[in-house]
Image (cartoon, rainbow, N blue to C red; front, side, top):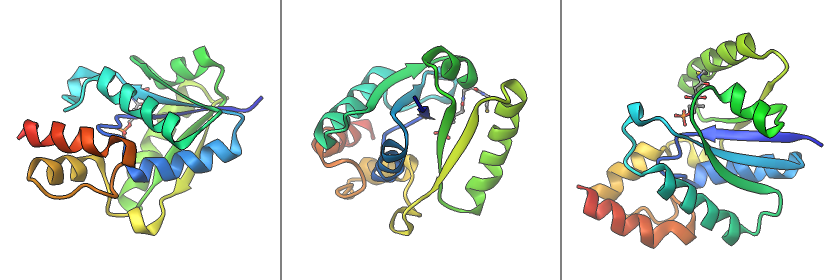
Length: 163
Ligand code: PNS
């Protein structure tokens, strides 16, 4: 059984993340979307809110082999705990590569048995990031089409209140 973990801050989960997840769900038997629980990153959305939005997206997309959760501490420890042999990450641009290269080097050092699989972002989403979504939403712009449709109303209202 091939199990993968798709980790991230997901603050919030975007349509770009969904694109990566669809690829992963088609390739692996089971995928865990894992929200990093790290208050040092000062996220806008609580871990509970982020997991709730991802759960809603899983339900709405009809994924049968995807689950949402959160983790604190090292990713490789969480991967081991859930039996994942693979880590999923998305790449949008060369700048992502530098960052991902470092994360991969650290994870390989910590556990060489866990491999990372990368999916190139759909070019239509190459500009998209969670921070863009937050900024657009907080400034009253439209985030329609940037986040999973099922979370659109919630995020629009929540980000409008945030500013
Ligand atoms: O969405 P992000 O913020 O780019 O995701 C980064 C993430 C969660 C993959 C990374 O920060 C992480 O794995 N953090 C957990 C701590 C850890 O394992 N550190 C060692 C690898 S950098």
